Image (cartoon, rainbow, N blue to C red; front, side):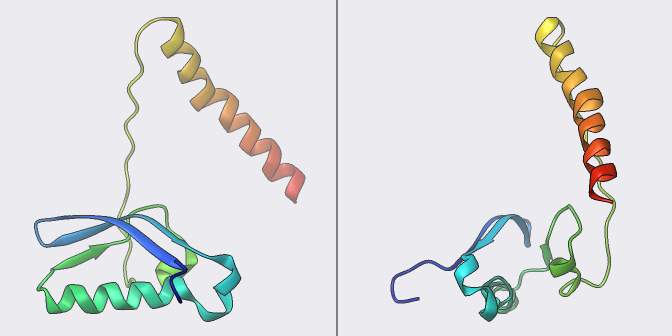
Length: 109
């Protein structure tokens, strides 16, 4: 808008599909829904170019539900190097971080 970026989508395309990696918009313009405006324009462009799919990717969020009629499952795979560094990262990911999330959830209730 007047040379000021107010919304963006970082995507990858492959095989007639566009995968949304990172959307963003300037909060100062949130009343005008720039994220929805850019999504509309991207979808319109994809239709004219014959794309088959626009994948919002995970995680599920309310704004994505306005555009999509169904959800897909998601899986994650983590690989940690053997040794102390890998063991520490594993503990952080699956023990410490989970405990902190649970503690925050309890405090917010």
